[in-house]
Each structure stands twice: as C-alpha cells, then as structure tokens.
Length: 309
Image (cartoon, rainbow, N blue to C red; front, top):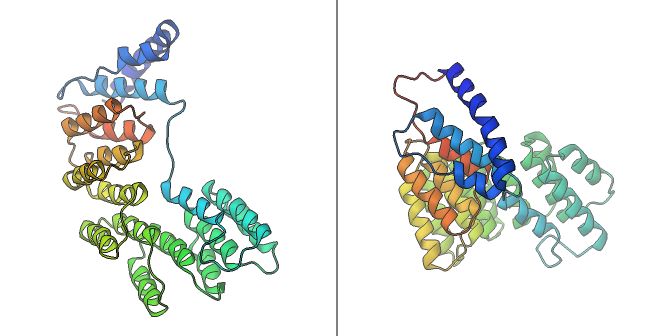
C-alpha cells in the first residue's frame, strides 16, 4: 500500500504543477480542492488535500499565540516586572524574539552579557527556555529572580506545562497564592495548555471557568489555549461549543481556532465533521494553515484493507 501511495503521488504531482502554470494559483486550487465524499479512494483524498496545501502554502498564517503574547509583554513599560529601563526593555524584546526562533543559547548569551539583569530580562530568557524545553536552565533563571512576578511565574508555568510537570505547576500556583500574586489571563492560558498536554479535559475546562469566576473575560488568545488543549484529547463537541461562544461574544475567530477544532476530529477519525469545519473556515475568508491541512488529512480513515506502516 505504501508503494502504491508513492506511485499515486508521483503521477499526480506533475498535473498539479501544470495546472498551477496554466490556471494560476486560484484556478489550480479550485480544480484540486473539490474534496471527495466520505469513503472515496483514500490516496486520492489525501493527494487532493496535499496538492491544495502545497499551492496555498505561501502566506499561510501560522503562529504560536502565547509566544506573541510574551514578545508583546517584553516590550511593555507598565507591567509588574520592576522599574522601567529602556535598554533592558529593548534587550528583553530581542531575547523574546530569539526564544520564538528557538535560539535559546543566543538568548541566554544576551542575558549573561548584562551584569545586573532585571526581572523583565530574566523573564524573557525564561520564556526562551520554555520555548526550547530547557528545564534545567529555566529553573536556574527562575530561582535567580529575587522578587517573583506574575509574568515570571507565567513563563515558568509555560515551561513546566510543555514538559507535563503538572505537580510542579500546582506547587507554583500555591506559591503564587502565598505571595498574593493574582493570576492573569496569560496564567490561565498557560494552565489550560499544560492540562491539555496530559489530556486532562476536566482541568482544562475548570481553569477556563476559574478564569471567568476571577472576573477575567476570555480573549481570542485564551480561547485559543482552550481549543488547543481540547484538540489533544479529541474533544470536538466541546471545541465547537467554544467556537459558538466566541461568536456570541463577538470575538474574532482566526485560523488557529478552527485549526484546533479540525485537529480534535483526528482522534476519532471524524472526517465528515472535520470537512464541515474546514469548509466553514474557508467560507469565513480564513486561509487554512499547514496544520489545518495536516489535521484534515489525519481524519481520513485508511482505505479498506490497508495497513499502516
């Protein structure tokens, strides 16, 4: 079956290239994006999606909303990370961007070059460690922060969550309570992501509801965190409810929100629902990203009699 699929793709790809030259990007996508009905020959369904993904790849929207949040926080002058220092604020932005690019060693080199690094700069370096899963370095930086702040705790929760260290997160939350550090929307977003990593749906929704009980209204970012966490557990029904809630609150749904909902269908191979969500996403004028196409292809059940290798 594997060799048959390879041969099928090999035959189809030249046709995709020819269509791209003759019809242009839009025409080729229209030709290949008429998705087969459920139960269609599986390699053909995958090939059609793969071709459309390739033609649409340029300009696809794909970002980690939490990483964007930490870069933005690094540039702020009015947060809880101590007195404003223009030079260190600029260095914090630089470190945060290096972290997004997973260049954690360069980020820590910037931190080491500052003799008296402030909390903001250390927090940015901690976020860089979280992005690259550098637990030992991240722990050391967090311990070196003399006055812990909510942003520094958020960055540490993000690191622990990505490594599925839920017990350590619970201890950190207890510490925040003793220090009267009030969780923010970012805190709850990091918590939902952490619980999603271990597929604890009940805790994801508890964190979401606790956020509301604390008087913090959900934003597009926190909805994104909840949807991403639910996707890991295949909780499509709950994900769809959150999308409806976003519409009721008149919050803008982006490609990431729909992508997470599509991915949630993969666990149960719910191809019809995934296609429905995919089409709704496109009807809203949102361009699917690479993960959306990959998630949809993962929902297509293997052809009858096929074996996965």
